[in-house]
Length: 186
Image (cartoon, rainbow, N blue to C red):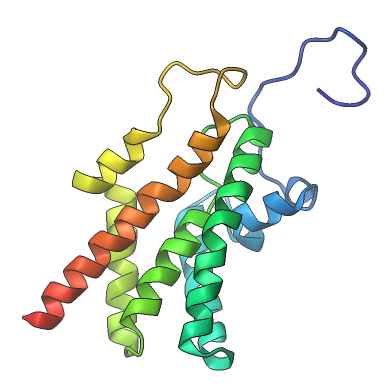
Protein backbone atom coordinates (compact mmCIF):
# COMPACT_ATOMS: atom_id res chain seq x y z
CA UNK A 1 0.00 0.00 0.00
CA UNK A 2 1.43 3.35 -0.92
CA UNK A 3 1.61 6.33 1.41
CA UNK A 4 -1.04 8.05 -0.73
CA UNK A 5 -3.60 5.25 -0.14
CA UNK A 6 -6.60 6.25 1.96
CA UNK A 7 -6.98 4.72 5.44
CA UNK A 8 -8.62 1.30 5.31
CA UNK A 9 -7.72 0.74 1.64
CA UNK A 10 -6.94 -2.80 0.57
CA UNK A 11 -3.22 -3.40 -0.01
CA UNK A 12 -2.18 -3.95 -3.62
CA UNK A 13 -0.70 -7.46 -3.94
CA UNK A 14 -0.46 -7.48 -7.73
CA UNK A 15 2.96 -8.49 -9.11
CA UNK A 16 5.34 -5.62 -9.87
CA UNK A 17 7.74 -5.42 -12.79
CA UNK A 18 11.43 -4.87 -12.32
CA UNK A 19 12.31 -1.50 -13.82
CA UNK A 20 15.23 0.88 -13.40
CA UNK A 21 13.06 3.00 -11.11
CA UNK A 22 12.15 -0.07 -9.02
CA UNK A 23 15.82 -1.12 -8.86
CA UNK A 24 16.91 2.23 -7.42
CA UNK A 25 13.97 2.46 -5.00
CA UNK A 26 15.71 0.26 -2.39
CA UNK A 27 19.29 -1.00 -1.90
CA UNK A 28 18.02 -4.58 -1.71
CA UNK A 29 16.54 -4.25 -5.20
CA UNK A 30 19.87 -3.06 -6.60
CA UNK A 31 21.65 -6.11 -5.17
CA UNK A 32 18.96 -8.70 -5.96
CA UNK A 33 18.64 -7.45 -9.54
CA UNK A 34 22.39 -7.88 -10.00
CA UNK A 35 23.06 -4.15 -10.34
CA UNK A 36 20.82 -4.08 -13.40
CA UNK A 37 21.85 -7.34 -15.02
CA UNK A 38 18.48 -8.84 -14.09
CA UNK A 39 16.43 -6.11 -15.76
CA UNK A 40 16.31 -7.48 -19.35
CA UNK A 41 13.05 -9.24 -20.17
CA UNK A 42 14.84 -12.01 -22.05
CA UNK A 43 17.27 -14.38 -20.32
CA UNK A 44 17.87 -12.30 -17.18
CA UNK A 45 19.42 -15.28 -15.39
CA UNK A 46 21.91 -15.88 -18.20
CA UNK A 47 22.78 -12.19 -18.32
CA UNK A 48 23.09 -12.15 -14.52
CA UNK A 49 25.50 -15.09 -14.71
CA UNK A 50 27.53 -13.31 -17.39
CA UNK A 51 27.66 -10.24 -15.14
CA UNK A 52 28.82 -12.49 -12.28
CA UNK A 53 31.58 -13.86 -14.51
CA UNK A 54 32.78 -10.37 -15.47
CA UNK A 55 32.58 -9.14 -11.87
CA UNK A 56 34.52 -12.17 -10.67
CA UNK A 57 37.28 -11.58 -13.22
CA UNK A 58 37.57 -7.96 -12.02
CA UNK A 59 37.74 -9.14 -8.39
CA UNK A 60 40.32 -11.74 -9.44
CA UNK A 61 42.55 -8.97 -10.81
CA UNK A 62 42.48 -6.86 -7.64
CA UNK A 63 41.75 -9.13 -4.68
CA UNK A 64 43.60 -12.11 -3.21
CA UNK A 65 41.85 -15.48 -3.49
CA UNK A 66 41.02 -15.58 0.24
CA UNK A 67 39.46 -12.11 0.14
CA UNK A 68 37.23 -13.15 -2.74
CA UNK A 69 36.14 -16.07 -0.57
CA UNK A 70 35.17 -13.61 2.18
CA UNK A 71 33.27 -11.49 -0.34
CA UNK A 72 31.33 -14.56 -1.45
CA UNK A 73 30.65 -15.58 2.14
CA UNK A 74 29.34 -12.08 2.96
CA UNK A 75 27.25 -12.15 -0.23
CA UNK A 76 25.18 -15.07 1.03
CA UNK A 77 23.36 -13.42 3.97
CA UNK A 78 23.27 -10.08 2.15
CA UNK A 79 21.79 -11.86 -0.86
CA UNK A 80 19.24 -13.68 1.29
CA UNK A 81 18.11 -10.33 2.68
CA UNK A 82 18.09 -8.65 -0.75
CA UNK A 83 16.21 -11.52 -2.43
CA UNK A 84 13.66 -11.63 0.40
CA UNK A 85 12.99 -7.88 0.32
CA UNK A 86 12.86 -7.69 -3.47
CA UNK A 87 10.59 -10.73 -3.87
CA UNK A 88 8.25 -9.29 -1.23
CA UNK A 89 8.22 -5.88 -2.92
CA UNK A 90 7.54 -7.51 -6.30
CA UNK A 91 4.81 -9.74 -4.75
CA UNK A 92 6.37 -12.78 -6.44
CA UNK A 93 7.92 -15.69 -4.52
CA UNK A 94 10.73 -16.28 -7.04
CA UNK A 95 10.94 -13.40 -9.54
CA UNK A 96 12.86 -14.20 -12.71
CA UNK A 97 14.57 -10.81 -12.58
CA UNK A 98 16.19 -11.57 -9.23
CA UNK A 99 19.64 -12.80 -10.29
CA UNK A 100 21.72 -12.48 -7.13
CA UNK A 101 21.34 -16.24 -6.71
CA UNK A 102 23.07 -16.78 -10.06
CA UNK A 103 25.75 -14.26 -9.13
CA UNK A 104 26.68 -15.92 -5.84
CA UNK A 105 26.32 -19.44 -7.23
CA UNK A 106 28.61 -18.75 -10.17
CA UNK A 107 31.10 -16.87 -8.00
CA UNK A 108 31.41 -20.02 -5.87
CA UNK A 109 32.04 -22.10 -8.99
CA UNK A 110 34.70 -19.73 -10.32
CA UNK A 111 36.32 -19.33 -6.90
CA UNK A 112 36.82 -23.10 -6.69
CA UNK A 113 37.92 -23.72 -10.29
CA UNK A 114 40.28 -20.77 -10.69
CA UNK A 115 42.89 -20.43 -11.96
CA UNK A 116 41.34 -21.87 -15.06
CA UNK A 117 41.66 -21.06 -18.72
CA UNK A 118 38.91 -19.52 -20.80
CA UNK A 119 37.66 -22.91 -22.04
CA UNK A 120 37.27 -24.28 -18.50
CA UNK A 121 35.50 -21.07 -17.44
CA UNK A 122 33.17 -21.38 -20.44
CA UNK A 123 32.54 -25.04 -19.59
CA UNK A 124 31.74 -24.03 -15.99
CA UNK A 125 29.38 -21.30 -17.25
CA UNK A 126 27.56 -23.72 -19.58
CA UNK A 127 27.24 -26.38 -16.87
CA UNK A 128 26.00 -23.92 -14.28
CA UNK A 129 23.40 -22.47 -16.66
CA UNK A 130 22.33 -26.00 -17.66
CA UNK A 131 21.80 -27.13 -14.06
CA UNK A 132 20.08 -23.89 -13.11
CA UNK A 133 17.75 -23.82 -16.12
CA UNK A 134 16.85 -27.51 -16.43
CA UNK A 135 16.36 -28.06 -12.69
CA UNK A 136 16.57 -31.85 -12.78
CA UNK A 137 17.57 -34.09 -9.89
CA UNK A 138 18.95 -32.33 -6.83
CA UNK A 139 18.48 -28.84 -8.33
CA UNK A 140 14.80 -29.55 -8.98
CA UNK A 141 14.42 -30.89 -5.44
CA UNK A 142 16.09 -27.76 -4.04
CA UNK A 143 13.92 -25.51 -6.21
CA UNK A 144 10.71 -27.12 -4.90
CA UNK A 145 11.82 -27.36 -1.26
CA UNK A 146 10.94 -23.75 -0.38
CA UNK A 147 8.02 -23.28 -2.79
CA UNK A 148 4.91 -22.44 -0.83
CA UNK A 149 2.12 -23.94 -2.90
CA UNK A 150 -1.09 -22.01 -2.62
CA UNK A 151 0.47 -19.15 -0.65
CA UNK A 152 -0.63 -15.65 -1.54
CA UNK A 153 1.53 -12.54 -1.08
CA UNK A 154 -0.22 -11.89 2.22
CA UNK A 155 0.36 -15.45 3.55
CA UNK A 156 3.80 -16.01 2.02
CA UNK A 157 6.70 -16.75 4.37
CA UNK A 158 9.03 -14.30 2.64
CA UNK A 159 12.25 -15.27 4.45
CA UNK A 160 11.77 -18.87 3.34
CA UNK A 161 11.04 -17.68 -0.20
CA UNK A 162 14.19 -15.53 -0.16
CA UNK A 163 16.31 -18.45 1.02
CA UNK A 164 14.71 -20.70 -1.60
CA UNK A 165 15.72 -18.27 -4.33
CA UNK A 166 19.36 -18.77 -3.33
CA UNK A 167 19.26 -22.44 -2.39
CA UNK A 168 18.61 -24.04 -5.79
CA UNK A 169 21.48 -22.05 -7.31
CA UNK A 170 23.81 -23.19 -4.54
CA UNK A 171 22.83 -26.77 -5.41
CA UNK A 172 23.38 -25.99 -9.12
CA UNK A 173 26.86 -24.70 -8.20
CA UNK A 174 27.56 -27.92 -6.28
CA UNK A 175 26.43 -30.05 -9.25
CA UNK A 176 28.60 -27.97 -11.59
CA UNK A 177 31.61 -28.42 -9.33
CA UNK A 178 30.96 -32.15 -9.05
CA UNK A 179 30.93 -32.57 -12.85
CA UNK A 180 34.08 -30.46 -13.18
CA UNK A 181 35.82 -32.56 -10.49
CA UNK A 182 34.88 -35.78 -12.32
CA UNK A 183 36.02 -34.24 -15.62
CA UNK A 184 39.36 -33.18 -14.14
CA UNK A 185 39.88 -36.58 -12.49
CA UNK A 186 39.10 -38.36 -15.73
